[in-house]
Length: 288
Image 1 (spheres, helix red, strand yellow):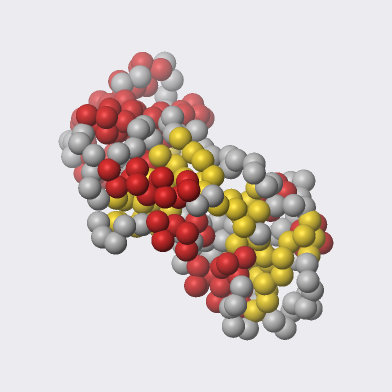
Image 2 (tube, helix red, strand yellow; image 1 turned 90 degrees about the vertical axis):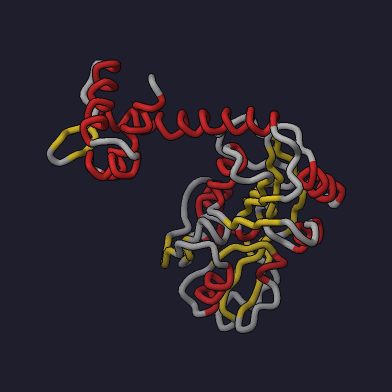
């Protein structure tokens, strides 16, 4: 498939409008229509209904393939450009909220750094497409087990830190005085669903056999302070690295004692590192 046609199709499907897609892509509306028609002819199936503009079943299936395909193309371009370019003297670091701990901050140079705090699943893509030199991803894992990351491109990953995890709850909560808690005993509690700030509920369910952990409130953002405030106000429990959960006024941080899980942080990069990125990567590797 012609990637230009595929990109046009994805844009039309996302905006549900040929005219809006033409405006965003810088094409005429006639050119957008021709792209869609050419793609449908190539695949031998209608991809969009016209009024309203919505994907057909075949179009829905193509969308499942399209984003990874286009991301791979961007990653390939970025990889080649990266090899041909001189090492950068600056550094762009993409990170999830809870991956940015004291160890990472201590490894950064005094100047020339751009920090991009992103939703957890977007960090590998930022590295793959060259919008970040390094990435930090984190999640819940068994001790020494690697994280399961989306397969967006050939990336190098290695662990740069592990620490215990704690449930953050108001200090008036009945469980606040416990010295430890089993994750299974909390499966029916009210939880905050904050996939881009705290540790995602999907990770907790996976550690508990795939069930439990219903959502009381969903928080869509990357601000840890906001998430902690919501938890302290009693709107639901959240799981955080011990360093983040400890010492918050009005709350208690109770360690998870079973199963044996940790908050794991991994460094992600593409290709051979040079310049500032190589220095930061080496410093983080030495701190494991």
